[in-house]
Length: 104
Image 1 (tube, helix red, strand yellow):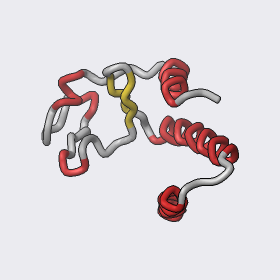
Image 2: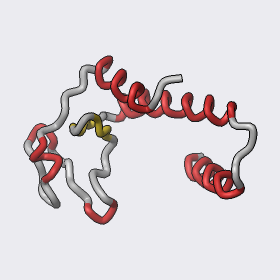
Image 3: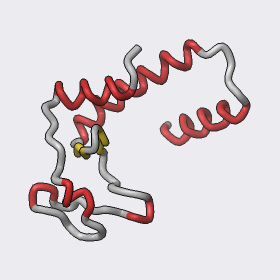
């Protein structure tokens, strides 16, 4: 089973993603360069409210299709891990249940 680091590295390589400029990622409350029009840093929620990956000190923006593909790989990984679990704590059960209910 691949680690999250391997999943992210592989996704970046397969999709030939290019990191955004560091200054664009650090711009607080302002539009960034025209290449990333509409990209905002939303401090209330801790960062950018667009699909993105952090990897080796860089930030990679994903479009809707890329995010759909990436999130499918995460769901498959989660399914494998849950299938291997013999039991989980009550709190984990609540967290997982609330998360899944929020997705559907």
